[in-house]
Length: 320
View 1 (cartoon, rainbow, N blue to C red):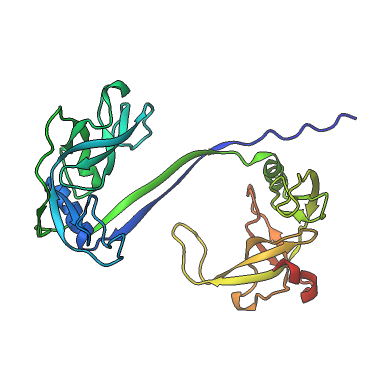
View 2: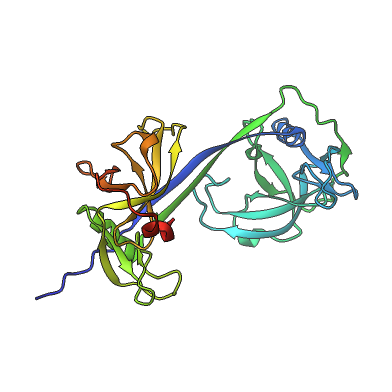
């Protein structure tokens, strides 16, 4: 008999993204509004240093600071790194240098992109200036990038600024996004393949004999590889649970509902799943449940009571 070939290792592109919304205090509001108006503001600390970008609390004394100053739009590169393959949504679509620039009048450096034809055109100590975006909205992207400024002398020192502007920016929305390629590896590939057949496959540690579901390919306690595959469940026991009262966006489940940790029979730890087929206020620790699959589903839609007597606490107490 020929042994079955192991499943092909899965791999898929994934995107994690969400809009991060935050309100701005008086310092950050003045800084971003200033960028919209073509003005770069910093803040003076207790020891007289000018920080750009500004912070709201002194990094040495932790006291609140509000003394805003205007610095020049020219500065000096303090260090740099060449980016030959820009990623989507970076400041420039063509190769550029990431630079730390100490603007004239500032004591700290600001990170941004430098538009340069190649790494040979970039050097520590070179003079640069801000290239403003054509349309400015009150964001760090109002500085489109830096560009070479030639061999000029440093500009004027910082001058006090009230930080007052008409129609000040009071909040921002930052679109956070991460693109990556994910591979679940050998162990989880087998687990996912099992789910396609409505089976739950774990792996047993050859040392402590604990069965991990989902498997990770190694025992986190003993540090040895897990290769002995074990089918667990399908029934299991609710070890602990929570009642969800806030409806999640794009989730077509009416609240309240119950999300629980479920120790499948034969498993050495609990996995999580939604409990259905029973009023939410009747779910309890020790409740015996079984999976409910929908047609074409890649994993159980929810778990429902089996009708068996509740499990004794001593049976599952180590899995809570």
